[in-house]
Length: 452
Image (cartoon, rainbow, N blue to C red; front, side, top):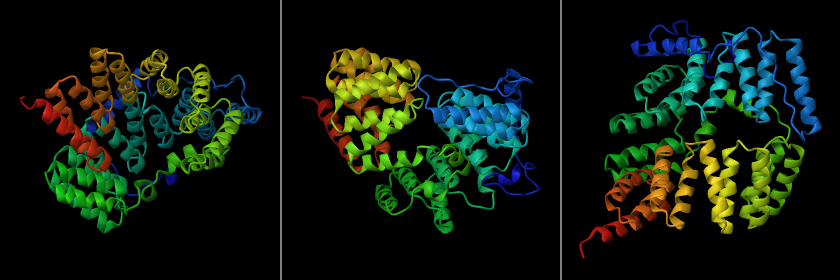
């Protein structure tokens, strides 16, 4: 199985120079196994998905793949393929069962624990890290595993552990654009301007410079007070390709594209929506929603297109139906609340947003929307608490910071407003429109603090 791993090499010395800090990796993985996260019983029931209104073609496809697993229960590939199909149809819990069984049956393959980690990143980062650890133990030079684990560690503030993984990526013979981007992000966190500059120069020499890297480098320069250099890098960013075009993840692509049924129509509908052909896009999304009634996303995309087209009543009706069919999807409740807010139904909007944050308590955008609702209804204390929750959940969301600063200035809480604006300045450095909003709020704050 190792021959097909992406971003890996056949070096014979893998694992000989890990460093002492990497010991936590093996220890914690063993501990997690003992707790049952990565351990499975000898016999696992093959998941069976039976949903009302399931399209016959989808039901046949799922039944066929499940039958294959039943006939070849010892095959890790059969379990994994069934998991990929379940993932495509948004049956993530059942997909995890399959990926875990595939991982047990193919103990040298990193792909299956990697897929489990990808699913768990948003809902259970600690368990996702445990699966990434398992994947890296199986294939120590698997670059995509190292990169995703490092990125997740960075979001959790575990910079030393992230740096160790990124060092292992940089030691590979093939340069990694995403690895350089994450190392530059780490340099920003550490306020290491010299290292960030060296990484950018390295990326230019290796021809792996991305627009995201230049934006990150601009933020480093801005933190160092080098505004002219930051602006120059920001201007250059528009002329470079995005990271996805330079450094793709073949395993993730395989997972997303496993079942191509409906994929081309979805791409076409998205293109129509982006080009302003909203009626045509809505018709195509509606067809996809009818074709795949067990999937939430076609219906959600239909509702969002209706919102853009100004058909709020139809959008609310569509989202209400979706919220009942997919009650555990926080994104649907959020968009229902947002649409209701635009119709002026504040009470119903509040209930929808509360359900969104109940299902996903780190849903920063939903907390910010709740704060807006509380502000409109003169509940200042509740709005303050909601904004703090939004900031904690999304510490790098410029829109949330700007909205919070505006609220604080209006509430004459100038000290906290100054703290938020100071952080916000670095978040909006690459966005001219946001920077203009920041400047207006900064002027407003200065006038509010000035003695009369």
